[in-house]
Length: 620
Image (tube, rainbow, N blue to C red):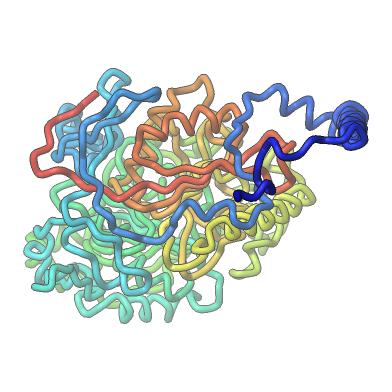
């Protein structure tokens, strides 16, 4: 006979049990009313009810909540297939010819602009109607890059399938192709074919690289960024830039190696960095015409060079007596060029510290009091950090005022790593409206808490799994500071419509760049392992299409890379809906303080897929 224990009709509820249930319901009803109407959570409850809440949010305090997302590199091939009918928009793969698409530095559009002052190599973004509305495919055979530090020396050919530099720069030890299907980077350069280490050792005999005084550097015309790669082991963060030109994929190689780099050029517009940003700037046969346009390019270097900072020049015209025949230039021409550079350096208040062999080094004075200048054409702009698409001028950026002869203009910085959390001079001097030293300290504490939560969600954060990291809305740089490690670096982006804090970020010994997220970023596809987007979509609401921002994030994110969004519920619901059609896996999570806080966290992983051999163009 079947047991009656599991039979739904085998038991009747007694009147007493019914009254007990009703009583308990009443008690919990009144407790709930008190909590929502009169308790401490009332304001949060009201706020959250105003939002479009997402019923699929995973509670942050649940330690198992993130396990459905896999942050490990899997390399599971996803077949490129056509879209199917769904409730959300599905973005198709772009044609395979767009594998290395850089929207604002495309060759076809560039050739429509003048070549004077390298204008055609500057940013020229497509109008709204010409923007791609498709997913940039990875090349067939794409593989997760080697982990750092091996990535400094080796790159998979399948990821950057361009061999031209192995031929053009064969005698300079830039890059070599090996039969195993990898590129090897011996560490050479045009002016240091025997290796970057020996070159840097010579610089360090003059420049205090080892003691933490030099932390941020700029490499102009960087090639494959071997100088920046080898400066990293000296605890110096170098931003390298080079144009997208006939030296195919040099910036792409740099980023694939795990070295900070952007597509850029000294041309007609100002560099996208704040004044007094870099402790050191170098040109190693960068071929920038320093004496043209009355020294305009050298004046722009002076703007971004910190008082007391160093400028290194190796290559023409230095050591012209030895190389004039190799360079196919007359002695008189090269001697005149060097004399002009010496005069410009004196005008800029730079003191020559060293010249031997192929290298010359100047140091910028710490303030204007010790300068021996004649008449100087000072820049009239009241804001030397207002640079986005601003025309480069032939004028000298004035030093900030000082009261003592030995005082560092703009403020003295501690040696790294002490300067990472020390109050930056721009904050101490009140140069950032609304940010006091106390608020700066609190911001650091907040980001330590946020990053701790991120690491709980994704235990691989802080390891070599994520080398190249971008913060799309960096604020005071708290996210990057909390993550600081030789295993990774963070490109801190300050949107041009946000408060200008990039100078503070550089004073902390971090690196970054100005950008407008309504446009494409100056990098190649698949160059970042992890992207952090804090308040980006609330900031850009009604400024540009969320789709455009997300498609650009997809372009620069590596296959199986991750994104951490932190934003309002309404914004993240919109983002989540769009990413469903982008081959991303996502999970919404509560704020660290609990479900009543309207700010949420959305974590995403880009799935691995590559271009199909028979793909067709999809431009819209």
